[in-house]
Length: 217
Image (cartoon, rainbow, N blue to C red; front, top):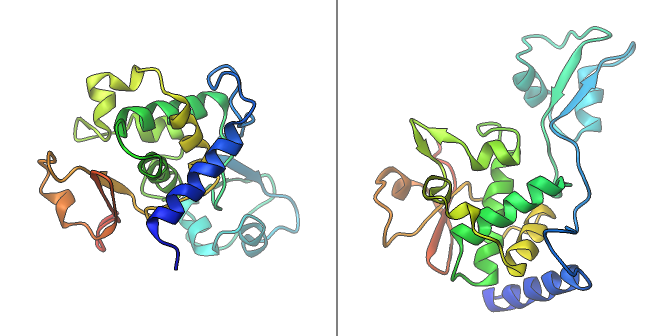
């Protein structure tokens, strides 16, 4: 089994290779422009099982996302198809925004810690309980409180460094050292008691990474 040190150096080398030749991360991100949340227009002969199989999701999830109570679908009906899979193609704006939140949340953390913060964003993008968009996830408010502190205090506007862009790229490609975490916090400064009750998936640097509660997210 690989040690965390080995994983760190593998991620670092991957990140350096991805960034090689890139003179300006902001001006020329590695990612190509991508699509927003997918939609699918039903044609004659379609069935839910075929559509779900083609998009790598279950029939049950496809029905839940679209509020369907039966498997009956009609030609011309537009279905919302949730994003799935390990890798995502981000638009330029999404890529820069990812780098900004990573830079703000993980300043002073190792490269592995930066990738981990990005992985939480991507895991939320895949999860049906969170908004279906990078910008919407990062700027989400719950009961009037921002999900990410840098949005509230303005530090998200700091210029991200090259390492933050490399971490964003790896996270978008599906690298996840958090084991599927949806939350993270610094136990030395976190005041939220609820977040401390969540199942821990990883400890990386100053951050604890956690999954959603069994009865919650």
